[in-house]
Every structure is written in C-alpha cells, then in structure tokens.
Amino acid sequence: MTDRFGSLGKQEGRVEIWRTISRSVHPPLSQVLILPGSKHYELDTVLSFGYRPENIFLVEKNPAVKANFTRIPRQDHCPKPGNFLRMLVSEAAMKLKARGITLNAAHLDFCSHCESKETFSETQKFLRSGIMRENGLLAITVLATREMEIDHLLGLTMSFGVKSQKGLDRRFGQLSNQDQGRLYMLWHTVGAKLDAINFGKYYNEKTRNSMLWAIFKVQKIGGHNESGS
Image (cartoon, rainbow, N blue to C red):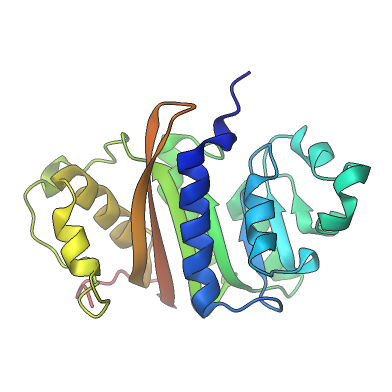
C-alpha cells in the first residue's frame, strides 16, 4: 500500500506550516489540534517544534488509526487517550469546547479527513463552535485540483487580505487564477474574519496530487471579511 502521508513534498509543507505557527503560537503551553492521518508524521512534526503531548489533540474518523498512535514503543510521545477523538473535526470541536478547551492553533489537513463537499462546511462548523481562541492560527490544507466553484472568480484581482504581510501580496499575484480562486474561497467561505499569514503549495509524489495550504489568524467568528484587510 502506498504511504501517501510519507511524501517528501507533504513533509516539507508540514514543516513550513508548523514553523509559521510556532513563531506566533509559542510552545510548549499552547493547545493545538491536528488531523494526523494514519501515520506519525504530523504528530512528530508538531512535537519537534516543542509542543507537549498533553496539549496536542488528534482527530481522525478511521477507527483503526487510534491503535497506531497508542502502541507501547511510541507511548511516551503520544497524547493521552482523552486527546484522541475518533469523529469528524466539527464534532470534535464541540466535544472539546464542552470540556472547556480552546485552541491556540489547528491544522485541518483535508487530504483524507473529508470528502470535497464537506471541506467548507466542516471548517465553518469547527470555527463556529468557538474552539479557536481570538488571534489563534488556523491552517487548512486542501487538494489543489478541486475546483471549489471558482469559475466565477477567474481573472478577479484581489488582495486576499495580505497587503500588511511582507511579500505575501506579491506571492499571491504570482499564483495561477485557479489557485488564487481556491485560496480566496478558503478565506471567504469559512464564515469568519481571517487574516492570511502564509500560504503555499506542494506536490505529493505518492498520490500525484498537488496540495494547497494557507494559514489564517482568526479575528472574529461569524462574519465574512468583505474588506480584504
């Protein structure tokens, strides 16, 4: 079976995402959430930046995954059992919020966790649960070849809310119209006021898919950022 989580390109993307997050959301006391997939790559990356196992929450639908993260040889590096939630990420957000937990950062890697049509709805529900702290960082990774109803955005000039971020407005302008549209849809559709912090794209040589990711600072839940600032 192909280890789709073991791609060099995907790992480089993970490292850049958590490097960016760790500059603003400082370990070790910050509480963070990931969708790890079936392997330890994402968890190991988060741990490598100094986040503590007890402050890392893992969400995965696949019932077989939990055993992989609780094997004795890796037990000293694993979050405690109560930090592993086998459900959709929107459901996990509600469960954690009910336990009085709020997050400093999260990476919603939708490469396997959700079907294409669920990506935006899951992100909306996740944010509207109130699980993210004000000024928390939310990273989202999606399959770049999903069109995401962007045809009407092609050729549109937009700032993507990055004018205050050095170099990001220029990088955004260098993307294809399709990728600009995909990032814009992530930014606009999730139902929150978000500022773009960083974004990128990588190729997963295992699956032969291109993936697009972005990191946002969550400022306000419940309303679109129409101004782009």
